[in-house]
Amino acid sequence: MRCSAAAGNQAAASWETGPVDVRNLTHDLFRNGRLLMPAIVYAVPLSLSISLVYCATRYELPQKIVRSAMAMFARILAGMAAIYGLLTILSW
Image 1 (cartoon, rainbow, N blue to C red):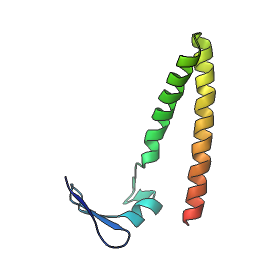
Image 2: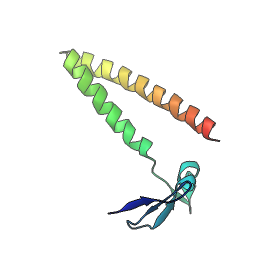
Image 3: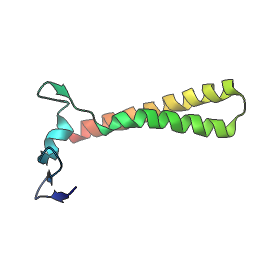
Image 4: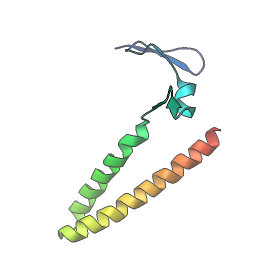
C-alpha cells in the first residue's frame, strides 16, 4: 500500500481507486448519485462510547450513568456540529 502526494491539492493513491482529487472529496456530498461516507460518521459511535465509559468511571448507579452519558453525548454532538458547520462555511 503506497501513497504519494502530487503537486497542488491532489494526492495520488495507488490502492484500488487510482488517483484521488482531494478538492472533489471535500465539497461533494454526492458523486454519481452515491452518498460519500465522510470520516465524521465514525465520530458518532466513538463519542457515544467515550461518554459512556467516562460516566461509568464517575458514577455507580446505572440510571445516573446513562442519564449523564446521554447529556454528555448530546453536548459533544452539538459541539462537533457547530465546529463542522463553521468549517463548512469557512471552506466556501
